[in-house]
Image 1 (cartoon, rainbow, N blue to C red):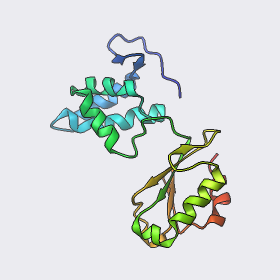
Image 2 (image 1 turned 180 degrees about the vertical axis):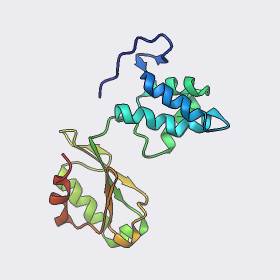
Image 3 (image 1 turned 90 degrees about the horizontal axis):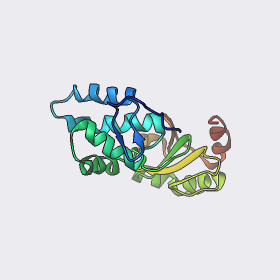
Length: 171
């Protein structure tokens, strides 16, 4: 996704990264919901990620300036949460649950089938940029293991034979 050029001199820019004015406004609005500005950090990261698909390194400094905190604070939050992406990801994120429940009901087979079908391993993105495959410690679908989530859609139990039809719905 391209970064939007901004000519507003009040827009926060760092090392070639410029926050879109709408994103900066949304962050400032989020700050207003909290007693301490740094409490809006997760939402600020999500705002950047919605526009760009991930959070580039230079965005950390820009977010920190809006929140009035140090970049290390923002970096700490960004690296702690597994759904804040710090490198480019595919158009669709597949989260395969590796919780104890899913592990006992076939996580290994589902992971291997996904890898074979997509031609990638955990933490990788398909060559066409369509899918990124990531593990997740729990999807809260323990009664339907093994489970996976594609974007915001949870599926389970999922067998290897279900994958072609399931993935076809995500272009």
